[in-house]
Image 1 (cartoon, rainbow, N blue to C red):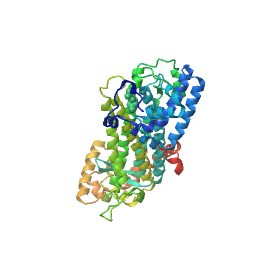
Image 2 (image 1 turned 180 degrees about the vertical axis):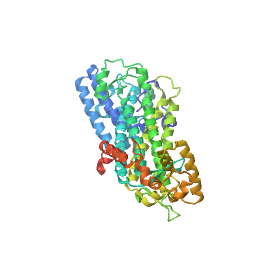
Image 3 (image 1 turned 90 degrees about the vertical axis):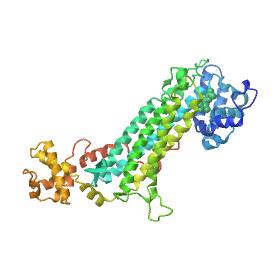
Image 4 (image 1 turned 60 degrees about the vertical axis):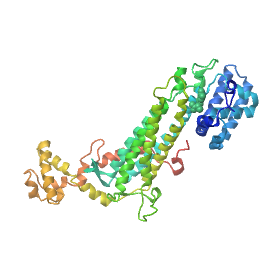
Length: 469
Ligand code: ARG
C-alpha cells in the first residue's frame, strides 16, 4: 500500500518501484519508527487531535508491533511496502482499522525519517562506545603483559630507537581513546529532536515539541523546520569519526602484519584469527588484519559518498537523502566488527621476546644513546651527533654493533669516552632514561596501564560484546 495514491491515475512501473523503495534496507529503522509513532500519538493526544482512548489503542497496537518487529527485524525487509514508515502504518491499520489512518496527522515522512535515523544513530553510538571500551580494556590487559619485552621502534620503517612492545600497544590505546572522545562529542550533537517539523515548514497542529523531544530522550526540539528535515550532519560526522578510527585500525593492522611477517617474525597470530592457503600447506595468513586494513577503504568511501551526496543539495528534503542509510549502516557495522576483531587479535597474540630483543638492539638503535652520553660529557649535541655518525660508519665497516667496539676504538673518535659508555649503550638504559611523561620507560607505561585499567575495566566474555546494531 502506497501512502500517496490519490493524486495518481496509474500505478508505478515495477522497475521504478524496485529502484525507489527503501524497505530493503530501512527495515533496520523499524523500532525507532515505532517509538517515534508512540510518542507522536501522545503528542497528538495532548494537542487534542486524538482522544485519550484513541491514543491508548494506538499505543497498545504499536507496542505489539514493536514486539513482533524485534523478534525478527530482517523479515520486514521482504514486505511489499515502499519504506519502513509505510510498513508500520499499514500494519497499524491492519491492527486497529481506520484509527490507524489518523496517526499521520501533522507528520511527514520527512520529519519521520529524520527522527528515525537520528534515534538509530544514537543507539549505534552507544554500541560503538561499548566496542571501543572493550578494545581499550583488551589493550590495557595486553600492554600489562609485555612491559619487559624490548621491541624495535621505527621511523621511515628503519629501526630507530628501542621501545617496549607495551609502549607500542599504548600508542594505539591513545588513538582509540581519542576515537571514543570523538564519538562522545558526536553524540552530544545528536540531542535535538526533528519530529514536529512536518514536511518542511513545521506542523500545523498544537504540538508541544519540547515535551515530544523529552519523551523521545532528546534534550530539546530542533529550531528550524527546513534544517531539521534536511540535516544529515550527524551522518557525515559519524562517518568521519568512524573513518578516523578505521584509519587507526588499519595502521594497527599494518604494523601487526609486518611484525607477523616471515621476515620480521616478532609476533605470531593465533590460529583463531588466521587462515590457511588452499595450495600452500605451510601458510598461515593474517586475514583478519588484512580485512581490517582493507575495510578502512569502505568506511572512508562511505564518508566521501555522503559528503558528495549532500554537496549542493537544495533545501529542504530531497530523495537524494535516502542514500544516507545504506552507507551509514554498512560503515558503522564495519567499524564495530573491526573493533571486535582487533580485540580478538590481541587475545591470542604471542610475541617472540628473543627476536624482538635482538631486533631492538640491532640497526644501531643505540646511536642516540652514545650522542646523549657525549652530551653528558660536555660536548654540544650537534657535535656529538657528528662524532657518533662517524662511529656508526666505522662500526658498520667492522660489522659490529656499537657496544662491541673496544674502548680504544671509541677513544679514537672522542677522548671523553670512558668505560661507563657500555652501560649507557645497554638496551635497558636506553629505556630507563626515557622516564618522561609519555616516554617508553617502564614506570611511565605502568602509569598509563593503570589509567587505562581504571577507565576501561575488562569485562567478562558475554558482557564484552555489544548488542547487534
Ligand atoms: N525513504 C525515504 C528516505 O529514506 C523516507 C522519506 C520519504 N519522503 C518523501 N518525501 N518521499 O529518505
